[in-house]
Image (cartoon, rainbow, N blue to C red; front, side):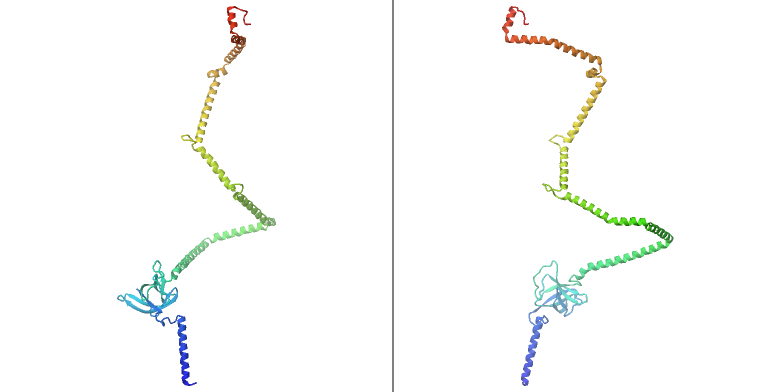
Length: 372
């Protein structure tokens, strides 16, 4: 192979390698500006832009979408305009704001994030547009979310410190009390020791130990009895809450229903039965008052009779008057017996007049022997 062919092959390999490199860079997004029209610029105006320089990363949702292309001062050097070059396949929407943020390592970046209650969601901004940004050390809200736990930890630490101080004061007070009442504490400890000796003496008795052992052995049976009692009570309560009978009600429901019926019945005695009429209870009270008045009147009459006042009282208390009344009754009875034949003759006479009136006229003209 001559030298010319070798140079051609080397140039061909170089071109193939360069082409493969460009393709790989385009595939992995390392050279977005090589293709015209793939990237676009957005200008962001800040009042303060510390840490921002050319090449500062521009991020959205934690993803790199471009870098800062240029920085300049405007409005009498009171404002900072940052030109951000954004990848063409990344969109920035009208409801998003730009923030200058620093991460925990101190690195500065421009972050685009949605702004609450800002219109324009889903509508991309035009390339070259000017947006207003803010300086924020917490654009994603991570620090704000950690403020609560950090504050809680701080408060807990302060509370622990205060508790530690209080424990120290309490320890000093206890120490001073122990120093002041050393003799009393010693006597108390001696009394406690004597009490423990007495308890040990009681427990050292064989009979007491046997009783304690017997009581301990009976504990399971006692617990079993208590458990049975509780189960029985539970079953009784369940019986009150279980539905039974044709009405499908519980005993408690029936009891409540009976109480309601009794309440309604009592209400009928306290409410008027008709228009303008008093309630039955008032009527019963009035009747009882009338009965009381009648009883008082009867008591007064009986008292007067016992004292002999009035005709009935004189009759019951005067013996002579009673005897006269008896004789008059016997005379009336005797006269009624004597009048009985006369009444019979008058009845016969009237019967004959009714049946034979001519006989009476004949006897009146010609006297006869009489009826009998």
